[in-house]
Picture 1: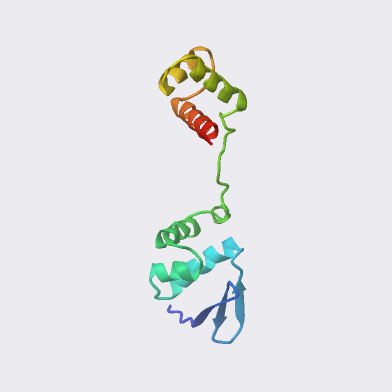
Picture 2: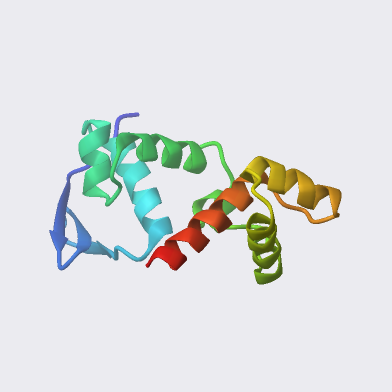
Length: 145
């Protein structure tokens, strides 16, 4: 069975407006992410637009995001359409107490960040050399400013 669909896609005030041949418009707000994803997959399945113009038409920046959305919509569950929480998932290990220990260790000795990290780990403080480097860089930037 073959389906013919004539849809006009326009952007008015930052919102996508899909208009069928009958003239009934469907407005997709740029804030409604689920609607954007489903409309992009529907348009991709029913029209012959390449992936890049289709993704930019629906408000996504690259065609790889288009493929990721397609993978979430077609074989995935409806929960995959909702935005996922991003950002840090654990509390920061850079506390004022640890920063004070790192700076005190640096001022009392002439050790490198790796030696400071090893010494603090032996004392039972959970730090990494990278954390020591970040704290010392911020400290020296603040002192020189």
